[in-house]
Amino acid sequence: MKQANNQIRVWDPLVRSFHWILVGAFAIAYLTEDDFLSLHVWSGYTIGIALAIRVIWGLVGTRHARFTDFVTSPKTAIRYVKDTLALRAKRYLGHNPAGGLMIVAMMFALIITLLSGIALYGVAEQAGPLAATMGNAGELWEDLLEGAHEFFANFTLFLVVVHVAGVVVESLVHKENLVTSMIDGFKRAE
Image 1: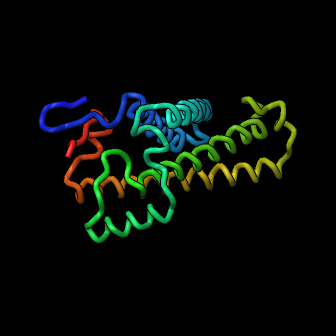
Image 2: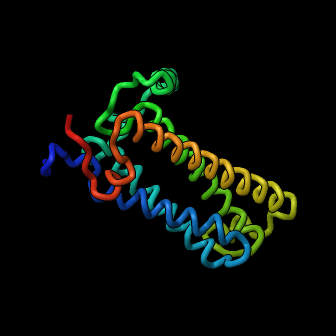
């Protein structure tokens, strides 16, 4: 679908909704931590549901939503980053190779954060879907899961910072506002 001024719809409503729901849910989960446990837990569940939907959409969704459109080898992504730093990177209509690798890394980190959080919730609070399995796991498991959950939450935040920096650099190099395109779904067609 084309819009005026040589614009083409690249990001479908599901991809855009997923992106912003994930931004909000991760920010809430990260900021609430132990202080507002119910809000933290429900933000985590929201992340889990969003990730499940996005994985399915990555297999059957629109062209630029599919993993086959943007998942490349790490070697290709590294070459793309080098080309970007040299100001000669090819412009991609969908995700570029570095962006594709970042999506996979963030999804992986979020899944580990989510799973360790659900397990920790079962051990520490005897609540959630793993309460029956993890409820009596003991203090050692609680400490291990808490460490893993905290590490991967912080690692995800690190990936988010790198992602935002990449969006800024790409927006400048290719003279387009990638944040706006993730809001309205349109990018320059050329």
